Image 1: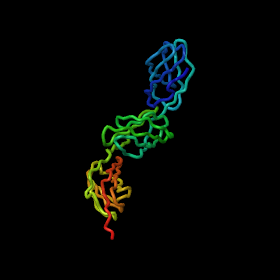
Image 2: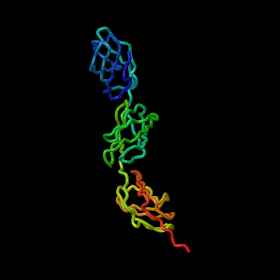
Image 3: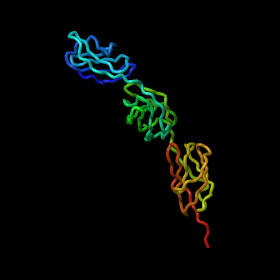
Image 4: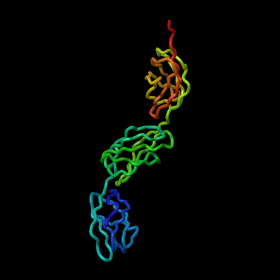
Length: 247
């Protein structure tokens, strides 16, 4: 006589189906000493809502013909989440987040706001999950659903990717040292700026502008790449290195 699922929340409320023979007219289903609520019954199955409990209990079905052999049911406590890393990423999603806590081995879903993702269980204290796309930039609550229930309390922030405008000035000597203002959007969380692949010192003026000092480069057009916590943006050939005179 199988039982499915064979585990559920200590708080009760799990829908459990018990299958077998001679089950029609079931009058009681016990989870240990507690009665479950019968919601459906046929000759080959009984559907119940589990009562609250803890540990491992025996489940029996009573019909006018007697009481069945016992089946084991395991109560699982609600998960506890200690933290997640990283705590932000692009609104388009796709990044991988690690969630640490306890009671995570039976996790079936992780919600980022209204969006749901299926996690990979590393062990009882860790999950890995690919972040789904967000509806908009900003923080959302993160919840984990396990056989023991759902736990909230963590937050993840979606960040829009940067966009870039034309730099000013747009040219400077190959020796570097030119102070350049780069306009754009979503630049507050800028992490790096490169000219032709070389890192440049920078400062964030506002969400719509950053200032950078060009590193030395080779004569010709160079790409400007700005990387933020929301991703990277490239302005192809936006800055031109000019060679000094030679005699």
